[in-house]
Length: 416
Ligand SMILES: Cc1cc2nc3c(=O)[nH]c(=O)nc-3n(C[C@H](O)[C@H](O)[C@H](O)COP(=O)(O)OP(=O)(O)OC[C@H]3O[C@@H](n4cnc5c(N)ncnc54)[C@H](O)[C@@H]3O)c2cc1C
Image 1 (cartoon, rainbow, N blue to C red):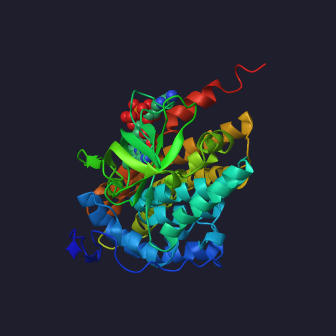
Image 2 (spheres, rainbow, N blue to C red; image 1 turned 180 degrees about the vertical axis):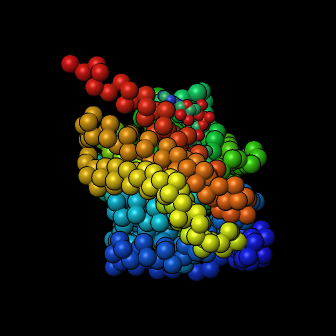
Image 3 (cartoon, protein in one colour; image 1 turned 120 degrees about the vertical axis):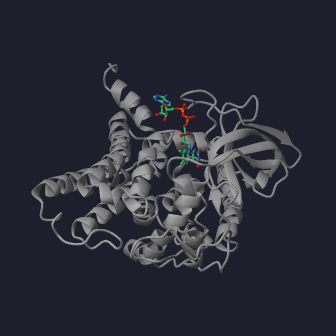
């Protein structure tokens, strides 16, 4: 299909409206660099499809089908379960590379991988009884099998928007019944709505002190997607509202043993940073756009090198690069040195890294519009989309920019 009349270029999206193609075998021998290289090869197709994905606010099925075919749905599935066995730090690099080409694909792919990491690498760090460990091993084997063999896609609708700043507790209730739970609640901004095979939700059994992470199958009775989706940016995430009414979840579809989600959130909060590389990649995408534009090499845009040779534009270009380098250095140094049970100092560094990455994405986009100028912000060029997408990083809970400010603002001022 040909979409959006890009001046000087024809765009064949090739995108489809559902899963198609084979589930490729995950290559567990790939190095981090090789994983990133595969994404870089797919990248141009992702960029082409981003036009339609953004314009129509549709899920990037074409990209997910490519990822599935290359075995990448099993990116963070441990090797012993048939996956590629990418670590959290490997994942960050892969996510950055996806975000460079399509922000919405990186964000949605993040939701899938976050579940793989909660149940995989992070669970392995936690304290469990032998019985819990054995049960988790059996349950996650089946969950991972669904990804590796059937190409299942997972999502993580946690947000409820109960009240401004709702960070504690959830209103979604799990009622124990024979063989499992009946789950009832409402999740807002359920990215991958209508596309995911599983909606992994945080919920609570009345009387219990901890949250449970239960995997609701999209095919269950009592699962409904409501509300329109016509947002400012990240339109391909299709984050509509998920309504659950007595949706049955069998015991075996509990993603982590009871209490382990809370332990993971408290002892390895770094996983809440997993969205940040999507925006780091987006920042890099904006740099790439600006480079091509200033050099007069961008298809459908002004030619000539006069802009590149303008010293004022070079100053703006330098500012953009410095911000990207700051984000990148902070983000990777935090994740590469992440430990269980971080200190307050480590947490301040982590919040600062996420704040910087998210705010810089939009700051860099704003400078790019200024530096490239009026002809660059026309809708037929990708900067306009990336500018809109970049604004949303700061809203992502639980570590939104304001939450980071609030926490860093209190840190070190009250301890003895
Ligand atoms: C494109 C997109 C995709 C998303 N995908 C998902 C998803 O897949 N899963 C999911 O669970 N959620 C998702 N979200 C939701 C997101 O993580 C937030 O929960 C949501 O944006 C909060 O919206 P709200 O209006 O309820 O915010 P509110 O709770 O009203 O908060 C508004 C703002 O106030 C600030 N704030 C909130 N609490 C505090 C606090 N305690 N201290 C200081 N400041 C605070 C934050 O900056 C926040 O952005 C998505 C959001 C978007 C925009």
